[in-house]
Length: 479
Ligand SMILES: Cc1cc2nc3c(=O)[nH]c(=O)nc-3n(C[C@H](O)[C@H](O)[C@H](O)COP(=O)(O)OP(=O)(O)OC[C@H]3O[C@@H](n4cnc5c(N)ncnc54)[C@H](O)[C@@H]3O)c2cc1C
Ligand code: FES
Ligand code: FES
Image (cartoon, rainbow, N blue to C red; front, side, top):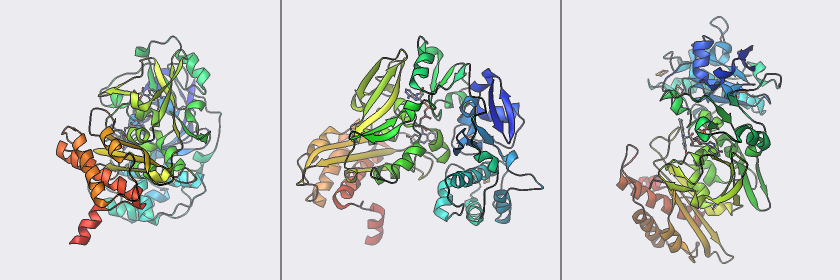
């Protein structure tokens, strides 16, 4: 029998329950109604809970788009475990004192996002003090519909001391793991063994389920058999060796954000985009493999990886391996070259000159929003600073993520340092003319075309000057 600890209580879980939503398990099976359902799509944060895995790694997640099996073997903290009316958690007290406790729908989610952030900081040895920027980042997955963010952020910034609920930080491997219809193999051999001979129609390959679980929460679909790939060791590797960057398909966006923030592989082009990928709750669960396989034309990793000329290592259910360039992966709207019985094991690309990669994401909201247009430019140069290879990749301008060959040709053999503003404008105009986007709720075709040009322009300024031209700031300065 699988197990989970919820609010310090060890609970046995019957195998079929593992394929159910964590939110309905908490509310309906355990009667913990403090965790709310707002949007049922990962967008509002009302269902936020804090989870610590067997190794004591802490994160927040949206329980509406998480299966119970994903937290088997873990500790879960809900708002009921945080404090009681007689003995409030310091976060709850701070919210009251700052007049930040508003409707009963969003407040539990805000409380959990704050406690989760505090516990996470404590688990990695950081203090719990927040400036405004850190508070906004930690709360970017939580919506307040009554415009009450100011007191909530003031409350967050006022909290001092330990975040409490220390039992969440204990490491233990004595909480039983998932089993039966929901399995989470620990290595590639076990994964192969679990998948061999399976009919792909009968099984969901689940990673962070930030896309896949919308079919459950929005369309009431059942997945009776789930194979969770997030605990497979080989799918969790993240390293640089032999001149290559290797990223396991199950590496989360949160880990990638940390990885590309510091060290010889620091890339602000990547971190600027990934820091705006969904919310802390989405980044803690969502994986790079799911982002690629999902084949959304507005996914954020594909343009970056196309600009880096990445390859995918793919494995079939029977263990046959093959390698494919990402450029050959997308065949049409939400269609990929993956056979029904194949999955992505890892992503690999040659270590680039990080200073020559630039990327920008344009979305309607700064936080917790999917791109309207997202573009990345990479220019490899020789010792004379002349472009030997240019790669320009975009999402949101076609049915699939695309490379803009005509723009790449225009940049070939150009001296980056000698690129004049006029020449940059010409390349930007070429990019805008090269795409044929559609109009939808996120933006009109004209807007997307204009933004394609603007992103190419900003990327080229960034690569040429080491900083981007701030278009907004310039227009301000002119007035
Ligand atoms: C609120 C919200 C905000 C979001 N914001 C963004 C955003 O800013 N940018 C963005 O790009 N996306 C965003 N997304 C979409 C989503 O979070 C990402 O696409 C995420 O990376 C999907 O990864 P996952 O691990 O959750 O995939 P899952 O949901 O587990 O899987 C998605 C699909 O890929 C398949 N799959 C998973 N792993 C593999 C594998 N290794 N091999 C083969 N198939 C696999 C699954 O079977 C499934 O069909 C957002 C989603 C939500 C709900
Ligand atoms: S209910 Fe809105 S994020 Fe889960
Ligand atoms: S706290 Fe719920 S709408 Fe503002």
